[in-house]
Amino acid sequence: MKSKNEILAALARSNDDRLLLAGLLDKEQTCMSRGYLTHTKFLDLNERAKCTDAVRLAGATGHALFWGGYEEAERGIYLFYPDYLDGKSAQEAAPLALLRAHKSKEDKLTHRDYLGALMGLQIDRSVVGDILVHEEGADIIVLEDMADFILLHFAKAGRKQISLTREPLAALKSAAVTQKDGSGSVASPRLDSVVALVFSLPRKEAQEKIEKGLVFVNNMPCPKPERQVNEGDRLTVRGIGRAKVVSFGGVSRKGRVFVQFVKSV
Image (cartoon, rainbow, N blue to C red; front, top):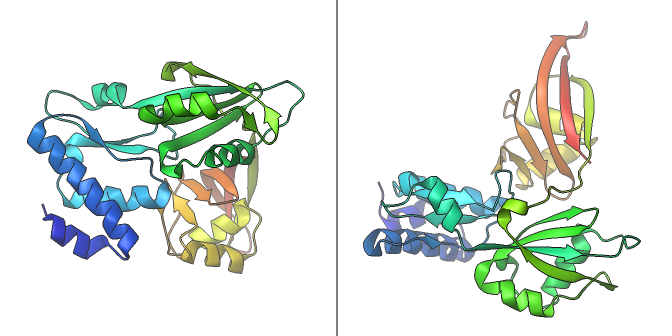
């Protein structure tokens, strides 16, 4: 277990990192000293990875969890819970609200439309979690203390009229995502090779995205193009999409490894 200063020295690469991690560690200390549930604001994948490292170094993994309202959430909050709660009860007590945006059938609205309209309300991105777009509109997860404000002011998205209702988190609808099976071959199961194949990118571009921290393996950033990909790994390329590596098969006559994957489109 390391001290707050030791963790900041080890993990903070910028002032923004320092503010993020110091706030996280303060939440953990408040939970432990005062005995009640504490939480961060919503974190993206990069912030989540940094906070996960900090939680580990602080020895807090036994009373901390990342939660975005459902198991596959990309954006979520870190919860710190006292001894009288367990992980499930902490999830149930998390201060998250589900708002459902209803649109007309003929209107075509995207994730960008909903997010852009929300940011137009002059609220911070960190109070909004995942936005799951479906045929009827979108399910939007937000921090509880912002729900009433958004319900009152969020009336349009992409210049189209919408209406909002509050729903229980258990009623969350899945995003309208099509799963597409794919296959191909790579010289080796290196991350850059697999990303290039799965997302139809030139190898050099795949390497650049990996080195820039835009590629995530199992929701954790991986800046090393040479990392070996395993069966079952989930890949995310920011701005492009997600996929899951199903299996590595046999080897071709030229020594290339066959890959099967499922991509979200």
